[in-house]
Length: 248
Image (cartoon, rainbow, N blue to C red; front, side, top):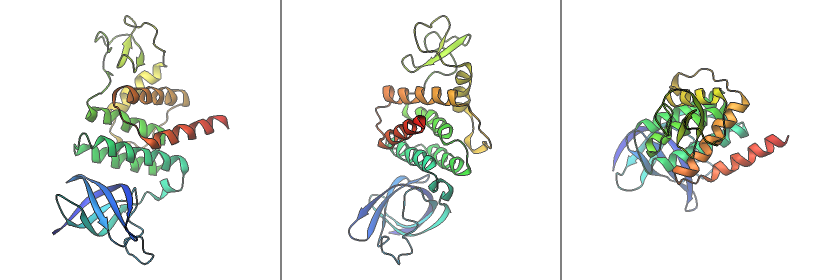
């Protein structure tokens, strides 16, 4: 096996034998690869603190193309320490790791790595984790081949008098095609298009009111349920967390 170094983000970790872990690492160069972190669960192991979900760094490994590679070490670029100290942040960050893990099983486009990295960085920097998650969810639909129509009416193609957005119809609905779909605010219609086209890396500030956030989030939840076939367990935890928050 040859030694290789590459950037990666740990999506999942699984205990193996008495003291090791298998890390599923998403890399730009090789897509999703499995890496054995030998002995990392031992107290004195130099790999112990870095062999965990959500570590972003430069991985040094004995690389095996068609099998498990073996970890030598990781130069940590970001451990997302701010995220780990906040329940809401870590809940959304864990969900987007799980979501990405599902998406790249269908499409390993290299741009997905940058989307994930930037989403995690923005949550760690303190931007609204729900909004950042929604931006990523919307962009990832492209790679699943089921993007909604957000440039024109999903029914007739008109760009005029857009009155709502419907997961059932597959995107925007204009005044002429509107029947009985639930109406959303004008800001929601504008923001969801902004989310799709915005460059996350350049984001420095993101303020979205609660009503708009809820409408966008509800649309994307329903859209994913209708068109992707993905079930992400960590999303259910977020829903329960939001219910508790609403009750306070």
